Every structure is written in structure tokens, then in C-alpha cells.
Image (tube, rainbow, N blue to C red; front, side):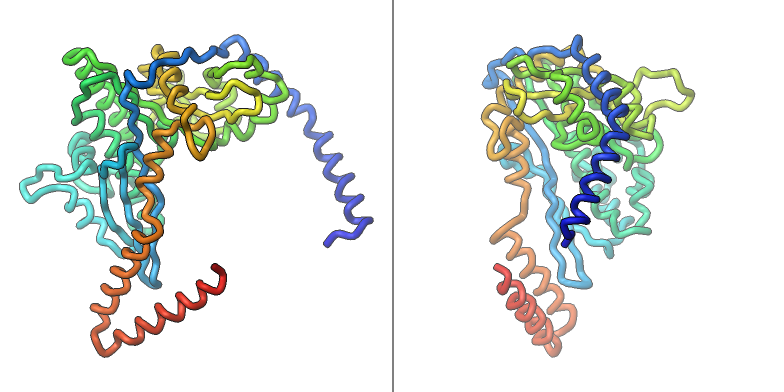
Length: 374
């Protein structure tokens, strides 16, 4: 522990560093204050006129070393399962890709539909991170399944009413090869246009993130500037100057129609906003991406989201549809015990009956140690 003299010295050093950074803080406050003209009050919409849907893949890991499993389960906010896969770092990536198709080449999963739509033959072609060189590819596969589910929801489903599809996360990604990510976004927008022309139903796609680098960097400046101190739910588009200051990847921040640089944007098809769904200054602010070509509908989109966020639980003023999807997608409690039992049973089968007692002993020892801390 610090003694009294060290605490005093530490206090002085911290104060000096904050004083040295005061000029930078003033610049950030000025940037935030400059957004005041773009702040708009959210006009509530009748939520029952929109079918609110969300997809979330959860993060379900089970390990019995050296075996590690990632259960990929994507569901919507109604609890309907949209994707179920089990992979491990030892999985054959080539076989995993072929598993997305029937023997005749017809896609059997949402990921297969995405691969066919983009004209790729393998997961390695779809993402450079699916090379198998790092065990983290299982997490990338989970993200690919989530994007594929969104692609399937928009491109291969019919909607009888106006529908807002919400992703837990921004409409940006660096896991896709070449320009496949923005091509996926283009195909989704084309499908949305087809639905409107055929059925006169609007489909919107947004991504909402609990935390982002740009919001964390400017959070203090936004509060000090009083940007959202208007006593009402509100939103404001994030200017490119803020994004350029925080993010080093231009392809991650540039708009689809930005042709100022020779290289086309390839990691983004959203337009970013700061949004507060509650009326008070202490209510949380979130970062939301609206599909770039749907930017003109921002007021309607945030009106529907706000109506859903008011009912959000347990996270206040956070869209309830995302929270419901997250709850349904988790493999926990009894379900996780079942998955672990299946994993142990599979290991027992592989080692043979004569070595099965060794596996049982290891499992028992692990359980006893864990119960000590319950």
C-alpha cells in the first residue's frame, strides 16, 4: 500500500498530468459543442406498428482441456433459433465451409447463402482470419455467422409490416476479405428496396453498440459541453472529424460514397450517431449505426428504437429487443452443464472404457475445487 508521503506525491503527479492535458480536453469540448446544431429530439413512434427484431450470437465457451468448444447460437428477440454450430480450434476449416452446403451445392445454412451470394467457395476466401493459424478463428467464425444471419433475415425473408432489424454491434467489420463486407451491405440494401417495391413494407437495419472508442474518448467532453442537456431523448450524427481523431483505419470510418481517396471503403456501410433514449443528462448515451442509404429515415428509426428502449431491462434505456435476444442466445445454467457432460462423454468414448475412470476422476476433482468458491 502507498504510505502518506507516496499518496501525496501521487496526487501531485496526477494533477500535473491532468493540467498538461487540459488544452486537449478544451479542444474536445469545442468539437462536442460544435455538434449542437445537429442535435435532434426523438419523436416517439407507436412501437406496435413495427416488428422489432434483433440477433445476437452470445459468447458460449466450454472447455475440458485440451478440448475447447465454441457454441455458436444466434437467435432473434422472440427466441427463434437462427443458427446453431459447434466448433473448436481443432476443427477442419475446409470441412466446416463445405458443411454450409448440401452435396448438390445448394446452401443449407445462412452462412452458405452469404458465401454463395458473394461468390466465394471457402471460409478462407471469405475471411483471411479463417486460415487456422490462430485459435482465435473460432471467434471470427461466430461473427461471420452473425453477419450471415442478418444477411439471411434481410435477403431471404418476407415481412408483412414495417420491420426494424437491430444488430448488437456496429455496421462495421474488418474480418472480411477484399470488399466482401460492403458488397454484402449492397446486396442487403437491394433486398430492402425489392421488399418495398413489392409489398410497400419498409425494412431498416441498424447496429447499436454499448461501448465504442469514439464515445469513450468524447464522453467527458460531451457532458461538459451540455450537448444533450435539452430534457428530451435526442440524437446527433457523429462528424467525420471525431471519427478521424479516434480511429486509424480510414476504411472503417469512410462513407460508401466517399471518393476522396483512391481506395474504396471496405469495412463500413453504416453512418454513426450518438443517441440518448432517456430524457435526462444522466441517462446513458449509445453509439448507433444506421445503414448509410437509409440515413434519411433516421428520425423514424430512432423513434421506434426509443419506444423499445424505454421498456429495456435490466439495462435501462437500451433496446429491449437486443436484451431479449442476448438472453435467449446464452447457453447457461442447466444448458451449459448438459454441453459439458456431452463433451466429457465424448472424451470418455475416445479414450476407451479402460481409461474412462481417469476422465471421471479429473471431472470430479475439478468440480470439488470449483465448489469451494461458490
